[in-house]
Image 1 (cartoon, rainbow, N blue to C red):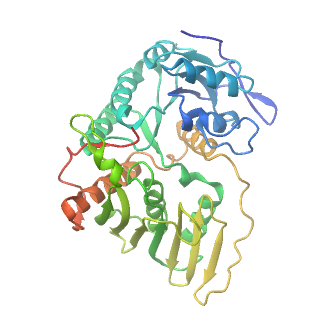
Image 2 (cartoon, rainbow, N blue to C red):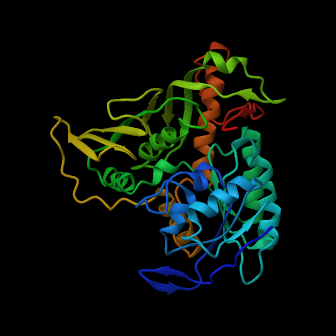
Image 3 (spheres, helix red, strand yellow):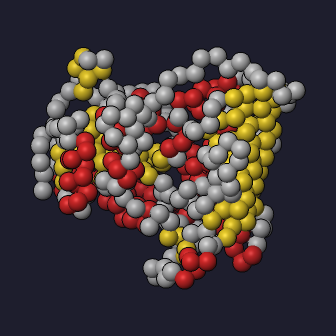
Length: 376
């Protein structure tokens, strides 16, 4: 099934722009198109971000569900009237031509189905012209799946970015720059707040901790220790064969090679959730998608941050980072080794907490086979 045709131009500041990358989306659930609306200034979904961008254009979408396709058309049809709509990933991939390659593919299906869809997309990448993939989190059900997809992406020459979406809030990126430039001196500790499911939810803040822990000096996660729990109702749910249930985070400690200690509290802090307090030798910064930008000196006096960038859809920001990379710019955040480490930290946290543990486990994790039914 296919409907409509693609406009060959995007628009930037009202003027047509040729030769912008095509974006195709596989999966039309909440994060792809269900959240937000065309009227939102910064819609929190893939389609909304693409709609606001003049740097990329939405080429096509696919979903097996008739209801999902109809909901997409009903909500977004006027904003993207010339987008092609398919009933399967296979049909979408077969639609690519030399004149209309699928430069960037967003994979937005449920977590346990990422692996099969990603293999299909990566195998087709040379034929359909795909140079980058934007994959929803949690990226894989196991570290073994991650290793296989990373190797296949490298073989096919495709850059893979994972949607730890809170990373790209414009004011968060600006605060990262200020920390990098020494606003609070030398960073030594990062404390983040967010619990719930380790891979499906808490991973946003895990990425945020890593983002600021490595803002000033390069490094990598060395070791992790964690405590988790299951809600009583979840222990009664039968998992598909070979899978384990996904636990909820209580707390997580991450040791980084540059000497920074990351701590994740599995609950809201005074600033809510999805934020970090970044501690340096000269003060502290608070950064998060829903947290007002704030900084204090070592005595607790507010620091002047200057003008913050205007708000924008995080999905607009990341797709434009990816497009910039394809045009010869720097690699997008949360790409390749970055997301590998965030995903590894999550699985090591589960490993650390297993069997009543809170064991300190060094990275990389030896157990690559554990499969978690995350975001299923």
